[in-house]
Amino acid sequence: MVRVPGLRRPPGPFRPEFWRSPLRGPWLTSVLGSLLLAGLVLVVATGFASHAAYAPELGRNGIVDPSRDLPLTFDWPTSPVWLYAATQGLHVILGIALVPLMLAKLWSVFPRLFAWPPVRSPAQAVERASLALLVGGVAFQFVTGIVNAQVYYPFRFNFVVAHYYGAVVFTAALLAHVAVKLPTVRRAYRERGVLAPLREDLAHTRPEPSDPDGGLAPVAPAEPTLSRRGLLAFAAGGSGLLLVTTAGQAIGGPLRKLALLSPRGTQPGRGPNGFQVNKTARAAGIRPERTGAGWRLEVAGGASPLALSRADLLALPQRTESLPIACVEGWSTTQSWTGVQLAELARMIGAEGRPLRVESLQPRGVLREATLTADQVTDERSLLALRVNGVDLSLDHGFPARVVVPALPGVHCTKWVARMTFVAS
Amino acid sequence: MRQRYGGSPLHLAAHAVAFALAGWAILQLADVRRADNVLAWFVAALLLHDLVVLPFYSLIDRIAAAATPGTAVNHVRVPAAFSALLLAVWSPTILGLNDASFGRVAGFTREGVFVHWLWLTAALFAGSAAVWLLRARRSAPDRR
Image (cartoon, rainbow over all chains, first blue to last red; front, side, top):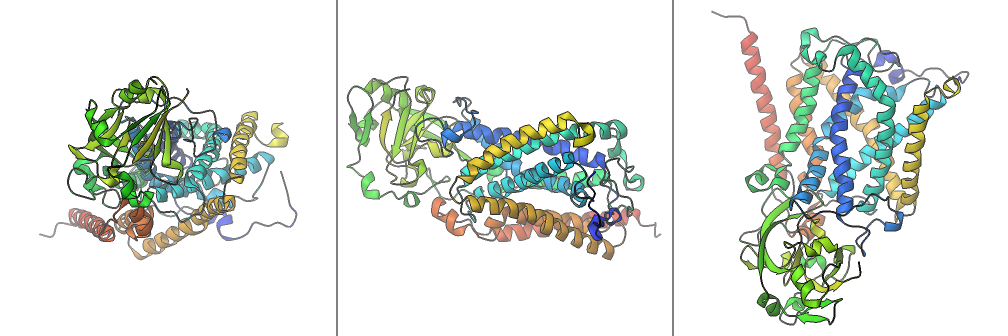
């Protein structure tokens, strides 16, 4: 016990009788925590999956320095084709939908922030430090993720790098929190039942009995205005509302219109090329004159390099695939692409079974080139697309030619391709 | 150990692992460009919730609860909270803060999102009022 002489309990929130909600208590926090944990496991898993989907160990793919990365990457598959659209849609949409649940959880434990004395033991000091990382981490991850999904950058750091390491800090603190709180949760469920308190309507809503660790169940409760199931329905309703008004940006079709507040909840243009553009030719610095008749695709890394015009490429066997473009921002759009198989180009140059570095006409930016794994090149559905929905690609969609690979993050489906180099595996 | 530390060995072990991992990530972050800004946002996000957002909505809620009889406050609480939630999450788009950055990359800006939010807010309050009226009518004494 650390006792500082002369340190008296301050007034206001540091006094237990300040906290009057009759609903707070170990059971309520356990339920909110369990629900939030289930959601966060999916958000964290899909987040790290997205990191792996970029194949950061290959070429210059890594935005996070590969020599300073965790060994968590694995070969990202190409099937099912909607894999990245699903995992990243889940990451963003579920993340947004968890906001009300997270706020409710933080509300339920808020009195503990004002525990007095602030530190009773070394164990408590350690735990409070890790909680600062946990709450700061969750707030940082949610704020940066939500603004990035709307292409809004009020901060000055690189989003990808900060969100990645921020996720590591948050996940580490979350693991410790779950490990040390599991007994508390189990005790709450054992004593009060997992679902039994949900049967209590407002007239039967009583405060939870005072908890031994103190600080959650109120010592001077007010009259309830909401039952516990009412509070859970309130939080779940908020989650549902966010889910319904967001999910359309990933699911697409008529549901896209339901994403009423998302910048991607609309079809921006008309006609076969009217679907969403991640980055316009203008924003990427593409000079239209370099995409005209003089454009040649350089293919290197095999026996002898090739320089193919668009007419040369159109004369090769064409294949049509329905594939999604899935963005890290959590939206996606499935279109019908026509072009030359990447495997066909590999065969032509005698470089089968090798990774492929694709470079864009885009003059600057980390995403001006991407390296595809050998499996991605070999997949028969991977295309160098020349046309979409039966017409030539528009300039904004990557004319004269762009890569489309199943289940690959959208920004690695390089547009305005200038050079393809098969590299040593 | 339990005496001196004040917790179980599992408590210590779990936190040792967590701090090792988090410490490694923080060291990596310390070397990135504008690391000071990352720290500022981390601390600001924490303080924003704990010192601004939660006290603010608690205060509003207390005022609303004091001003409305019985459980009628829920019919204001729920639509107001949902509307605020939508605004908080989508504020860059609703308030057009991302018009320049989003417009530059996507080639268009979405019009009318603020109006969508107003309509959603109106619908939430109208729905809540309708439920309140239904409940009031059902629980009213028979007037024949």
